[in-house]
Each structure stands twice: as structure tokens, then as C-alpha cells.
Image (tube, rainbow, N blue to C red; front, top):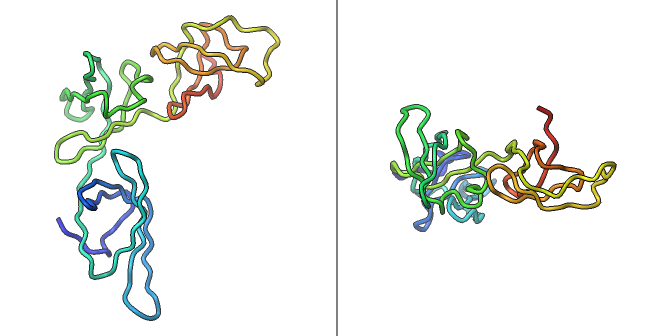
Length: 188
């Protein structure tokens, strides 16, 4: 569906040169001389590349209606991950490549944000932070609570994260899924 520049809103989807983008920022500019225009910052849904464009008031844009939906992870079978739509309870299969690096942090019954375009999931994002239990790590050193050193540790999802030297197996920690780095200890 074609729209005018006056209908642009943050978070909406646009098709630009055959690629799907999110509108992250937009500024309507009405100069004293000449016609109005809009400066738009777009983020590619698949590659996360940022594109900045200026559209004149006479330009028509292609609207891409995107739907955000929360889905609950149920199980994995090979490179396919099964999720349940929390509204309709339908099972939906999401391939591993749409989950990206977030697949390392999937936990049972975890809620994941998905973006749906024309009935197909085109992107799935795990939560920014997860609470995980350390399953394997070198023993913690008592009194070594400085942040001077890090060691690798395996968490209950199977992923390896960098943790401070004082963390021991069995402890519960908060992990940033964007970087795979320890944030803090979590008390049960």
C-alpha cells in the first residue's frame, strides 16, 4: 500500500528498494522556502544496517504492515525451533538463521519477540537479559572479587559466557544476550 510522507510513524515498516526496513527516527521539515520533506532513519530488518533517506512531499512510499508477536519457545528439532503463539496457541516453526546468535540463549518456555510480515516470521529476538545457572566453570577463588580477570563458563543453555573469577558452578547469573557477557549475580 502506498503512503505519503505525512503518514510515516516510528516503528512502522517500509519497503525501500525491495528491502524491508523499520522506521527508527523521522523528522518532518518545513523550510521557509520550498516544499516540505522528511528525514528518515531506517533499520534493515534482516541485516540491522542503518539507512538514512530524505523523502519529498511528492514521494509515495510502500508501507509494509509488520506485526509484533510474543511467542513461547517449546522445543528444538534439528535446525528448526518450535514456538507457540501465546494468543492462538498455534505451533510455529522458526528456522535457526532467523534467531541468529540468540539461539545459544534459548531456555525452555522463554518468551521471544517476533516480527511477522505477510503471515511469515521474518525476525525473532530473544530477551536482552536472561537469568542462567552456571553448569561448568573452574572453581571460584575466595576473596578474588575484583573485576580484574574473567574465565569462560558454561550456562544451562549450553552457551559459554565470560564471568569473573569468583563465580562458581551452581551460581545463578544475569547474562546480556547481545554480548554474551556476565552482568551480575542473582540471588535466589
